[in-house]
Amino acid sequence: MQEISLKQGQSSSRRGQDLRRLLLLLLLPYSLILLRQQLPKSQTSDQGEALHGSWKSEKGKCSIGKDPVTARLSYTEPLPEGERVHGWLDATEEEGLWQGTLVLLQAGEGPWYGPSFGPPPEVVGDIKVRLLKGEKPQMETQIRMKEEDEDWSEPTKFELEEGVEEKPMPKPDLSNLLPAEDREKEVEPDDSDDEVKRAKCAKGPKRSVALKIAARRMLDSNPALPMAKHKVQGLHGVEQHELVDIGALQSGCELPSVSVEQMLDRRRHEEQDPLKRDGRPEVSGAPKEGLGNGSPPPRRDSRGFSSARAVSWDEKQNYLVADTSLGGNVPVEQLDDEMVMLRKQQHQEEEACRRIAATRRARNLCRGEVGEARGRAPWEEFFQSALWLCAAMGQESSKGSKDQPARLVPTTVQVNKASLQSRWWSLQVSGAAPTPNCLDSYGRQRRGLLYAALFERHCGEYRTEMQRCMRKGKLDPLDMKTWYPLCGESYEMETACATGLLKHVDVKCRPQLDSAADALGVARGQMDPKMTKSLDEIGKCMAKLATDRGLRVEIDSAQAKEKFRMSKQLMIR
Image (cartoon, rainbow, N blue to C red):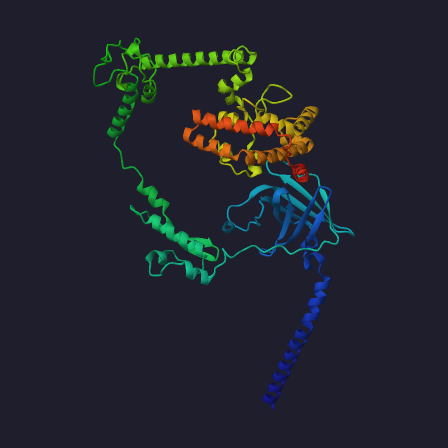
């Protein structure tokens, strides 16, 4: 009876435990709901969702959304010409505050997720985003530009645009990064190749296989390099690669043991080399007292050493010229250091005399004393003979007449923005066309106006306006952050006008420009007759454009002003 009662008690206790478990399972959802209602709102909902959308302020617009790949907050601010400022926003310890790093994305580029997406973009600064409490959705941003600002800028308040639907962020193209078994089978070589077996990664992308094969074939050359296995964190997990063992290379390149006698002998040889170059007496022989060609021996001081400076073999080779006083060309080994230095001094004096003569001639040309006798205007003779002035040319007009600059060359920025077709422009941008050739192509004209006059006629008003603004504010041209917000609109209008003018020049004078580019390649920068003729043809074409009254330069003023507004906004912030 006792056993029966004991069994009945155990069964009843088990039924009680089962009932309690069943009740807990039934009440668990309700308890979770109550617990969720009691927790603070910041712990149950993601505050970052309140930042999603398009925001606007007095200075511009920006958008914040959820990235489809990383599920992080993504900040985007548009710039002119398709560029964007992008940053990942991470929550801080302070409630309602996010912070991130801003990078500059070019047109058509997507966010940078890691090394598999190419080199990282340029970092331009940092940003803080603070969500403000109120009836209307508002937020504040603070920006700190890299290498320019030490402290955060003043807060800029943004309001959420009403009626603008939140567009989902575009998903990046991962076809070249994610593994595709079908593509790998098409591009992978035969598995029987031993190199493929050593380099193949079963789950890796196809380009990693090709890269490893090429690296293995390069490293398997003689002599073989020491290799060591290393574990590397790859795109699909830990990968094992064979890399060059730097430690083994260093140990193999160590010098053998050297005795004291060998070190002393090496030092004696090093000390003998400068003695031989200076003409000093050698330790193992008597000093040489002559050159063997009848020339006097070099002067020596009280110690018996030569007082002349040591001259290298290259310097002697440069001054190996025909000289009647030396009886013709003298072999290099018989040239004395003093003879070389004397010839070098004569060359310097001759060069100084030539410069003085060129300066006097140019001065006379400017005064009109030369050239009129030959039947030509002084300025025509000046541009024909005084090419030495081209070396002092920059990108701005010369110090001459205030109404019309005498020299002007299109800047690299203007040439790149114009998208020109002639081969001459690429030579100018790369520096293959020297500055004198560029000046001759735009200013060496005998029958027409200069390119500077053509530029002054169509775009001079914008340059004059910018110079007036700079003088009025006494602004430093080298401090772009100071003068651009005040005078940048004239600068952008001038650049747009110059771009449109260069397009006309490229279309009208393309045969002459291409011919000059071919002649420059043959002449290799020298002013031969063919090169001079080609430059004169460009000058004639420039003269026709300068006298063309029907020429109208199209300027996209709206785009230039919009670019100035966006650039000014970014620079001020």
